Length: 328
Ligand SMILES: [Zn+2]
Image 1 (cartoon, protein in one colour):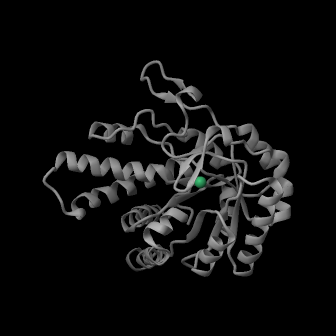
Image 2: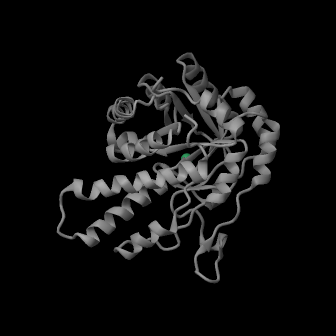
C-alpha cells in the first residue's frame, strides 16, 4: 500500500467523525518525528510539502525521505503505514504537474486569490491532469489571512468562504476536497491584538471563535464531501514560553484553540493542516537545549531531543485534536 491517495482516508474520516493530520515536512528529523508518532499510534498520515520546502530541500530529497519512512514502518514495526504525499499551496499548473510527475499522490492548487471564474479554470486544468495520473486535488475557496512560506495575505485581503459558492465550484472543477476559510489563519501570529480579547488573569490573547455556521452550511450543501482546514496550529503556549524564556522573542503568538479543531474534525473537516506547531516544538526544544548545554555543537545533540519534541507534539495532536489514532 505505502503511498496512497486520500480518497479512502477521507471517506473513513468523514464517516468516523475524525480528521487526518497533514503535517509539513522540510527535513529528515521532521519526517522521522511525525512518522514515528503515526506508527506508534497506528494513525493514517498526510505529509505535505510546500513550494518553499521544495525549494529548501529539493523534491527528490523529500520524496526519498518519505519513501524511507514507509520502508522503515514496514521493516521495524511490520506496519503498512498509509501515507499521502501532498503538495501544499501549489500556485501554478506547472508546479502541480511537476509534483504529480515526481510521485506525489495529492496536490493542492490554491488560486483562491483570483476571481471565482479564474480559480475554477485553473483548478479544473489541474484536476484533469491529476485525475489522468491517479492523483487527487485539493482546491481553495475563500482566502485565509496570515503568512506561510510564500503565501502572505493581509487580514484586509482575507475573506470567509461563501457557502453559496461551494457547490458550483466543486461541481465545475471536479476537485476531491476543498479548503475553506472560516477564521483560521496561517503562521504563529494568526490574529492581531485588536482582533482578540485578552484573558484578564493571564494577559494572553484569546482569538475570535471559528465560524462554525459557515462550516455547517458548507457541509449541508456538500454532504459527504471532505473539507480541509489550513492555518490550524494551536500555537501551544508552553512552546512559546520556552522560546521566550531561552532568548526568543515571540510576543502575542496565538493559535486556534484545540477544542475548536476537535469540534471541526467531528464534522465535515477531514484534513487539518499543522505546520507552525512543528516549528515551535522543534525551536523550543533546540533553544532549551542550548540554554542548558551551551558547550554543545554536535547537531545530533540538539536534534535528537528536537525530533522527540516533534514526535510528542504530533502524538498529542493525533489523539486529542484529530482523533485518528488507531484508524490505519
Ligand atoms: Zn495553508
